[in-house]
Length: 544
Image (cartoon, rainbow, N blue to C red; front, top):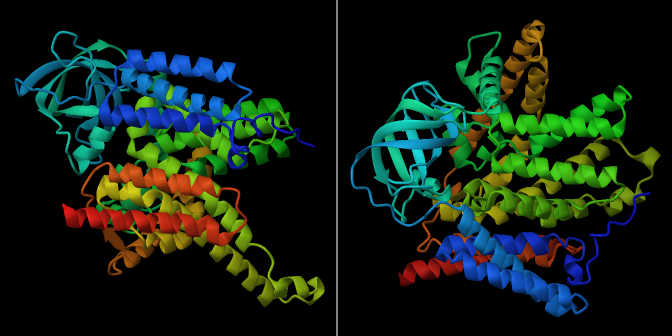
């Protein structure tokens, strides 16, 4: 029997948060980062306040209310100071010369879909040019470099305005304040690490492997590569538009679905081979970490891996770690390692959706899965095949609807704030495409497993072909659903702070009733909060 988790109860927390004290670490760090991102702070005084509050929490640890408030203040102050110290300058950049030569440390680099040049993000390392530590969006010619290389580059430099929209708004969310267009590499100042070179080579090799089909189908191969590598840029334009319109583009992001599927398959193999549990678990986590790194270490994939690591660690130590606890710990670890992630769109949407699923969607689905009176009163030997099928379909549809609703409620304010549109139709389209997406995902995993040997190339191409055919079917379904009138809610927010505010209110609504056993409370309260937030947005639009 699993021992009680000592983290599961905490005298500093109200009863409803007793099962997840890690929230008292993650939420203050997130709040502190948001404060610095919105207003900017001076790190010195905030570090002092955080240190004094942490000391107060220690000395008053037997007084729950005082210590709890002190912990929140300490986490918020330290989170704001840490965000300020680690985040590149966000003040408007003054560009004196449009054409420049700059030393740049490449953080991310990805070849263009057409194969001509590459795009990415980097840091300016020149201490004398006035742009030191600024993050810059790169668009350059030539071969794509490995991440971590320091280059001397030339090109046209333009600032990104604070009130940017569209793609520039996404760049601002990544911390970039400058863009280098038409860039050219003039030389290499420092080489990348061997691991970065290996990672880039493996990504290119896997993309070519997944694109190989028994017949000529470049779009199908591109969609499979996008599914397994998390590169939505590889999707054909019409397919990407359809998935965006229906709110199902998340199917092509490396997330918990990929990590959980791979972990389950590897665990099954180790059990069949009768391998020791502890060493096998460590090897599986290492393989999953390599996969996350090769696919670009997106916020959703990193979150899924950290959650898997905490869940496995709890199981290995015979301590049952709740999913919400693992999510909060993953959030805290991410913010400690990369505090600037709090403004990243992928980070916000990924954690918001998973929070909604864990706190409301999953429990609501479990309530819907309870046996009806007809099931309870019908003896097992008297149940017909049609009855069993009907009951299973009902549970599947209602459970999927609950999960989809919770994820949609959680992400709507943030999506509207970031992109100005959100798909309500995705609630229903996900019921079809999410289960269907698991089939090409499993086929793609089998193909990736075959990539260890070139002798397995022939069966791998047929696995790729079957997966590509199913992805074409998913694309057709998405395109048909995208033709539905008003499937998207188009709403430009009058103020940028309304999106994060709405996301925070929905998150609090989920957490406030996370232990409820009422379906109406689990999904009804977030729905009411979302409706109130939308009314506030419309009111502010009328006023402005």
